[in-house]
Length: 148
Ligand SMILES: [Zn+2]
Ligand SMILES: [Zn+2]
Image (spheres, rainbow, N blue to C red):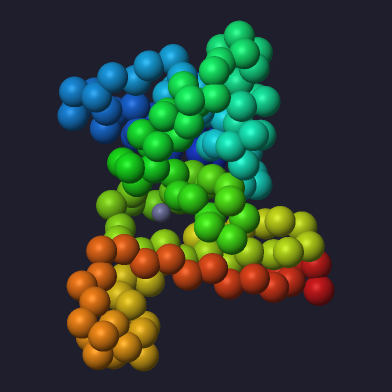
């Protein structure tokens, strides 16, 4: 598994373990999709993932790859960064409701932030409008320390 970045190896293994424990099938496309995403330091778009999988999966059909992406996303092992239309591996316990990201627009570095609760003002607004929150996403764009 040397194509997964070393500090992501644990995430890969725990995802596989999770599937085994829950009777979920780790098909070849699922395995390769997760490897591609965890092996990348930057978020990957669906097209980048398709390209990376051209060799190991012998030019897979896009729906096969999209389904594998959906699979990992629905189980919380990867996140979709809405504003970039790209995917990144979850860097912590994959069972959290909210995802927040700090995104550098210069180098493309993305850091996952873990707020356990919705910021008070947003909470207040959602209560006022009667929304029952299922999940929430916050993406902060800017220039990172290194790029400033
Ligand atoms: Zn996460
Ligand atoms: Zn940067």
